[in-house]
Amino acid sequence: MEMKDFEDAVRELADALRARGWRIACAESCSGGLIAGACTQLAGSSDWFECGFVSYGNAAKTALLGVPEPLLAAQGAVSEAVARAMAEGAIARAAVQLSVAVTGIAGPAGAVPGKPVGTVWLATAGPGGTRAERLQLAGDRDAVRAQTVAAAVQRLTERARDGA
Image (cartoon, rainbow, N blue to C red; front, top):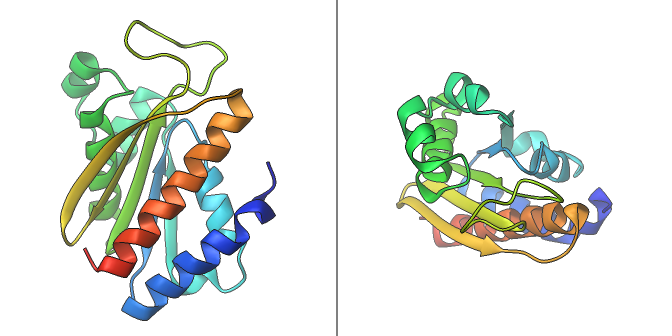
């Protein structure tokens, strides 16, 4: 996976964000900073990209994004509730208009009952509230992570265009 593979999609995101005067933040677990990397690969991204939080471990999710420990214990890191809390934590801490969060199982290990490899929860937070969805992605670790980046950029672009 090359960052240039996302260049056109990120350019669309940049245009939508610039049109609104919005800035974004990313809260990443399974993608390990790849969303932020794809965004900042584009020259001029400082106009609309504020920061990225890489919170791979549960303690980092709590310390960096304010995800409550009891929520992590009850729901697990790969859950709708945690993805929502990550997105909301990012938007609150970065003072941006829009955020995206991803948490998932990229593989090859880590699957648990009900959460096979390729399970990713993606959440966005913005003026219209927080939205989350479960993705079930196919392929090896690199493929799952690349599809996660693509989905995150797409959802951010949709929300920036809609203004919600």
